[in-house]
Every structure is written in structure tokens, then in C-alpha cells.
Image (cartoon, rainbow, N blue to C red):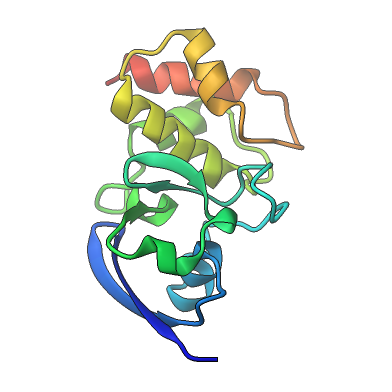
Length: 155
């Protein structure tokens, strides 16, 4: 199969990736770029484990072909920390005990990041709505919602 070259920005750096046209953004990020915070869960866009910030919006990378990322600005969990230290949202998740096994957490954090970029002071109802596309099998959502509210209070 002929490959295509995708030019985009990933974690604030321009990249060019040669990839088969039938590969997903998820595959490009994990396999070609080694960004393993992007997890494959359901492969149907239902669980949120593969969520990345794509042009400012949280999206499930398992539902986007790599070629669609041409010119896009993509942020994974690896692009969130500042100088290797947790950012406000990551720190709030740590302090709130909102992390269990960690499988869903990258997607949760990126969804929260995208929400707070658009709405730095959301209501609890807005937080619940924004986080509703991310599933966690280890714990309830109360600590996760509290973590997002804590991060918002520090913005």
C-alpha cells in the first residue's frame, strides 16, 4: 500500500509522518510517534481512552484517519506538563485522588484541559457534561469531577 505523509503539530512541535492511508490517528500517535499515553480502549469512540485535543477540541483518535490530521494541532498527555512538572489539571487529579489504574486518565485529563481552555470556570453540571464521553471502570466519577473543579478554581 502506498504511504502518505502527514504534516501536523503534535505537542507544540511540527512533525511529518509517513503512514498508510488506512491507519488511524491513534496508530500514528502511538506507533509512529511513540506517544503511549493515547490508549486504545473500545476502538469505536465510545470510551474516551484515546482522547486527544485536536484543534482545540477533545476527540477520540480511534475514529480519525491519520490523513485527516494534515495541518492539525494535536495535544496528547505528553504535551500537557510544563518542564516535566504536572500542570494545573494534572496536579488537581493527583491531589483529588482521581487516578486509579491510569488507563482512562490521559483521556480524562485532556477532556478537562479542553473544557478549561474554553470555559475556565465551568459549573459542576458543565463539568459532568464535558466528562460524560470518558468512561472509567475503576472508580466513580465524583473524584474526577472534583479534580476538574479544583483545577478550575486555580485557573
